[in-house]
Length: 341
Picture: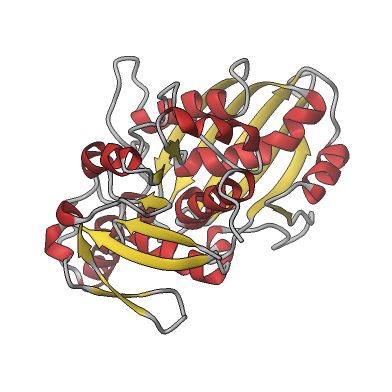
């Protein structure tokens, strides 16, 4: 016996990926609905590679009564309007937007890191999915924190344009093509040219000079992993279509060697260690696309602090950073609270 599952925002990058991953992982489904805005009503979407086509329903008229789980990939605006309605109807919401992440009554979950926190979903019938850059980072930090207690993390991100949605991917493609043929490469989605460039600016600027993306990494890591961990971030958009990369500098309370860290990471859930000290002995974003794992490379000791490590962390942001983590939350919810059959 399976669940009745709704995917809200089914026509977007993350919504489509959610449908693909639900099918790939054979999530137990009795009935599935693809829901989107009125302009997408009637659009047909394939449910993974099952051959089954789903006709998009209009969220304005959708009744969540009787449905078990709703995976929301619709942005904060539609989520603010429809997630409480779904939750009130008894449908548990797993939300990919930033709307509920810092709500003290809504658990913010990465299943490999803080699975027990999911038990708090009953307060609002809503569970939050973290920011893409946070999700892969905390998966990498968790086994190291358990072993040697992290004091401080300095992270620089190299985030792909798919994090900005289809418009971001289209802009990189069109600008690259235009530059090759000598046409204009004026920015529309991004604040500066993204093709053959990097932009140290993701989301809006805050009063202290940081961006909201950087703030999210700090606040969400504290909520998911440990409020005592200090985090400082610089988030950068790079001309890569899919796959976020992060350079992490980690300072610990206890001594930990690179070899010990490698051994821990090799055995940790959700992580694939690829760390050969030779040409090509590391993972890049191109190689992680379509994979479930968070890849770790370049593990080495930092001699400038007493107990420090540097690591390189790469993951498919549409998967672990969004759709996969949401489906993993649904799987965890099923195991702990919604057992059927």
